[in-house]
Image (tube, rainbow, N blue to C red; front, side, top):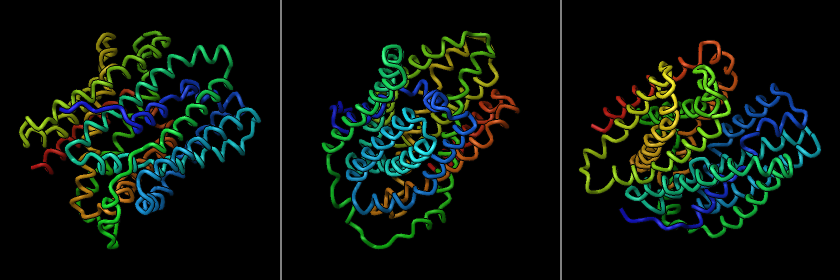
Length: 386
């Protein structure tokens, strides 16, 4: 596999990972007088904006091009972070609401666009490696910001965390202007009108929507409920920061693993089995994580679950783009991917609203159910690849 060089897209991913206030994102709101109840309403508003804006922004992206859409998304993200800083300093609920709307629009312009952009530049053969490569730079940024946040917070408080993040966003905007332009033929090669919703005549479309939704719930469980599993096993909550840093480092193995597994030296039939095999492996790991109480096993699973989830997720994104080509929607790739991503936004809204129910049935069973769903997805992947 040819080694990929660092480029401006990697730089943007790295800078976007430098969110220094991320470990205390809830405190940014609550210290400014926002209750936890209102916080979840703001999060639901954010998801709602993304849900409603997916298709319109997808069509805009297909008109103006992927590069310009990514630049616009970075400008909007900088605007959202600046509004967050202003909202915190002024303790203005109205600004927090505006910030959620602007951040949601920014997310709309990146939804499906990054995937479409990389697929246009690198094609089916290079897409997986580049996606994982860029993802690693985002993870590196996250690790650095997680390590640095305590020092910045001690020296300059919450304002320091927010200002440092805004500065990184400014640099990201500048870096985005150096993104390579995709070939113009990927956008204007076929100007015939394509009925995007017609893709749902193909059963594969529903598989992608369901799969994306399950992956969204899986990440929700990892991001919010790892700490509860830690407490249930009698382990110190203070270990959580070290665990996050450790599993983030392990996640970076996705690039070499996918590069090795998807290498052209492996037979086509072997490569076609990868989505099913990796999804099944992740499913088994999630199921075990839900039922196992042995501390060493829990810690080991905590470290490898994000990586095991990343592998089928990247492969799914590659299959999505291949499906768009099969459906002859390549001239409206961003809009088509946005339609498929809408299922994720809908699930996020529902899960935010049903968070109390998830807690009542027991978080361990949520991990078990997600594990079962991932194994079911693996079986469906195996069938469609035949």
